Length: 247
Image (cartoon, rainbow, N blue to C red):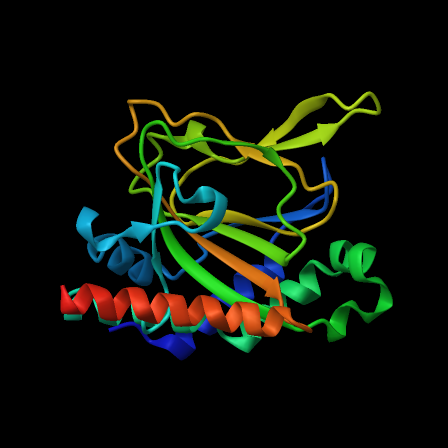
């Protein structure tokens, strides 16, 4: 059983102590995101292939599938796995965790939102993702509907360290140069405030990879009409869960 309060304390401490890097844009890198026993529990509770659902939007046709880490998203899982992933979702949706990201990513948020960045409402959407051979995503900065992007890598060992996200800089002539590659190793990850210059990509996942598992924790801007849009996503998640149970 995951102790949610203890895990929130641990993750918040990791965020507060995470090194800052400014090349090619302001971001954090971190390790030992979860306590060791919690990380082991996550690996033991990995869903089966049939438990994952399709992505939505432009990623719908990609070689990536997901489990939404909301109560309605994990309802399809067996009880033991539901307990684990439900607790993880609770941790990652914690206001304390959100506030820690905002505090540490303040320079990037301020560049985008100005001095009012601390009052911008953000809506946490954590999903467990699984990429298989053939998955790729081209160079992009992330949609402006997002305020913060976080990815936590979940491999069992260091054997596929080369499949981490690549960060890019854009030259004045418009050409992109790879500036940094995240190492896809256990219990590590990165975070950045989404901006016009946060260019990143994933190279094609090769046949040497069985699965590329990670948690994507996205904080969507939650103001104006986006409040309704964000809640509608939850309704869609619930509908998929109920449809799965009826099937």
